[in-house]
Length: 218
Image (cartoon, rainbow, N blue to C red; front, side):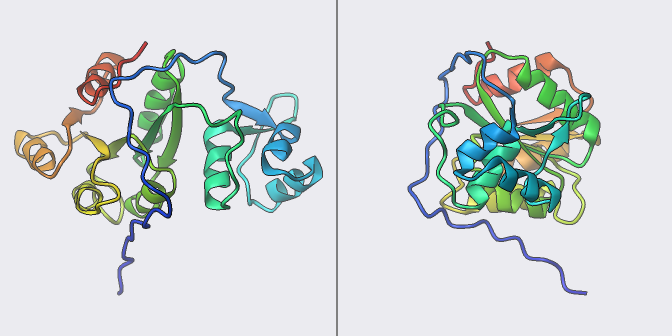
């Protein structure tokens, strides 16, 4: 059976270098938007956004009152994937975080930790190595939280490909594993990861790991 080959897309524009050590204050940064607001960002009508949502083109969720909302990270991902220029209201100098893990509880833990911080973050999620390969090129994360045991392409392979590609080699990788062994930790660090977290981890563990790559949590 043929295996899928992951290609890390070549960035069309000059790579945006991470601003490590720099913290940005978030002033009521919105984490979700109405269909009318998203229509403004996409230069279309709200009815077009509703049609895209019904067709599955853009990811939405519904509030308890039944209103459609689009998460900030899903909107930014949609804009990047469809070559729509980022609206000035969205283009703040936030730290871009990609979480690569198929374990929902871990993704939720990291998301909650980051969303409660005053530092401004853009968060995106990949559930396997193939999705990670795509998002590394389109989302251009500052930091990648990378699970070592992934379905399909494992974390070692993803880490190696990130570090071998000139366009992504400066990406900061924080590895994670529930099957922690010193040998495993040493191996992923030798391949370019900054550190390796043992699951389950605490908010303090996340804070210390991010500090290692110059991202201070305010």
